[in-house]
Amino acid sequence: MSALGAVAPAAAGLNVGNLTVVSKSRRTPIVAGVSFELLPGQVLGLVGESGSGKSTVAVALLGLARRGLEIADGSVLIDDRNVLALSPRELREARGSLISYVPQDPAAGLNPGHKIGWQLREALTVHRAALPSGQSVEDRIMEVLAEVGLPASRELLERYPHQLSGGQQQRVALGMAFAARPGVIVLDEPTTGLDVTTQRRVLDTVRELTARHQVMSVYISHDLSVVAQIAQRVAVMYAGRIAEIGPVLNVIKHPAHPYTEGLMCSIPPIEHRVNRLRQIDGAMPRLNAIPPGCAFNPRCPKAFDRCFADRPELLEAGATQAACWLHSADATTSQEHTTHV
Image 1 (cartoon, rainbow, N blue to C red):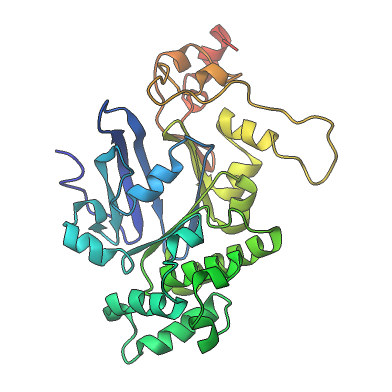
Image 2 (cartoon, rainbow, N blue to C red; image 1 turned 60 degrees about the vertical axis):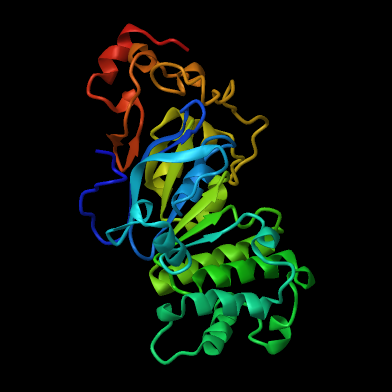
């Protein structure tokens, strides 16, 4: 039976199992078998280059799929409640109270025809049951503004989105996402287009609110250096699958997958000057033309025979897990026989 219909009991937290999203026309997997867990108060960074599937995962966590795609399998359990098994009505009620979303472009997530105060009131009125006992909507609005670093003033509530700076717009979007104190918040590259100072303040706000309210935040980014500032755990995606996952410092300092290692070598070091950075040769394959075996094998300098025949699942690799045959029991023997790149 599909995991959409029946899932095993899970521990409290966010448990994503075998999440699979395909194209409706060709049934091509866009995201294939993505699984991860997250505990209250933690941030997971979901990292990958364009086309890796990270934003598709972000949308699927809310029970949605972009035009032309559909969720074919998997489960998204938040404290044992499967988002993907909810009815349309239950799903509408869950968005905002069980799980919230912060878009990349805050202007696109705010209604340009309504004032900020109206939009915050609408979000909280819909999820009034999530408010602490005895707290009014107006009191919570002022509390939300203070939490995200905005002036708790009537003057700000009377402004329209276009009257705010990009950083202020993003803070309003954060406030709306955290307002009903959901279990999970999905943030899809929310600092894109912001200057470095504003970006850092937004990251600090996300990290602080995640810890204070013990929510679980999934932070989508293409930038490992940004994720290092905010996340406790990181999952590196490649061609629709997770290539490596683990504690962020372990993944960054001791990458176990050749793709992650290549990403880290392409980042300029702070401690010393280098004349030339290493790069990953080639390009990520089209999702309808994934090669047999490991999807990274055409670009991998450490590939051996098994990499071209069998697709690896996540294997234990010290403090992390990596989808790489280098961490299988027979890796040393196999490498002695042949190396292809």
